[in-house]
Amino acid sequence: MSYSEQNIAKEQELTVFEGAESEEEEPFVSYDIATYPSDLTLSVIFEMWKNEDLEIPRFQRHFVWSIKQSSLLIESFLMGLPVPQAFIYVDEANKNLVIDGQQRILSVIYYFEGYFGSENLQGRRQVFRLTGLNEKSPYARKRFVDLDESDQRKLKGCVLRFMNVRQLDPKKEHTSIYHIFERLNTGGTPLKPQEIRNCVFRGKLVQVLGELNNLPQWRRILGKRGLDKHQKDVELILRVLALYKKWGEYEKPMKEFLNSEMRKNKNAQGNRIHKFKELFPAVCEKVVEELGDKPFHIRGPLNSSVLDSVLCVLIESGAKFPKDFAERYKKLVADSSFEETTYYGTSDEKVLKQRFEIAKKHLVG
Image (cartoon, rainbow, N blue to C red; front, top):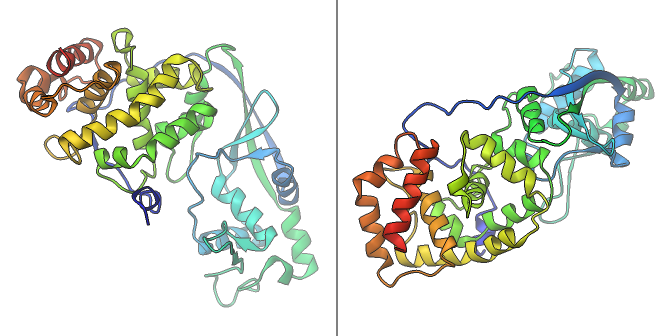
């Protein structure tokens, strides 16, 4: 198995140091949205799925429930127990994008299909029998086709409430959709910032970031073969891209700066994006060649501020490394003024610009 195949085999969590202070302030965005409920039967939801009127973003978190969790949900419907509502964002084309409720919706779809989860490497799927129920349950070990006709009709007629969300205003500044997702995401394990961006700013850029995230040399820089289950590794690439040729224009908070980059460049067009796609792999390869694995793990975890400034400066140089690059890098990380900008107030405008200036002076000056 190749390195790139290994690194997508198992999702992991990436530990990243982003500054000694508490989390940065939340951006204030004023927006107007309409929310309205709709009670849909499970059979209608199944038809919407088959007709592709209901969409789960490709790069959202994968289906993670066990067959027991899904079985308990199906039993809850059959027993008439309450089930939490799902949140759906209705876009301009009237497609229904799942904000929260993927695990519930897919559990229902899988049960109606008769197979649990997606195909394995051999192209096979697990037969979906209700598993893990009390042995006295009349539904234990039953597939949908094993239920009697009355229970089949009952299940198909069960209702899952959708809370539908539409953005009314502002009409042009669509980063506000990010905050709708962030605040309405009510799952047991809430989506993280980059997962939300992948939902609301879906387009070619999401695919580009995903491809770059699978580069073997990038995985070696991160020190993690497996992809981060919350897309933190993807967010780090977005951070470098957003600051590439624009760090002089940076305004905090970083979260909104990254939202804006995703929104404006979701179609991954323009010379700046194409140049980044070309240079990022070359820079990663040369960094690993010169510095070895995990070069930005300062004092333990990966330091995102060292990473963003160094990679940006090198990409902006056209991937032209000085012959004494390794020695220059050692002097950079030993520079107390640089160290301070990578530890305190790292997302402050003044501190960030100072960090980049120092990195540029040491590495390519």
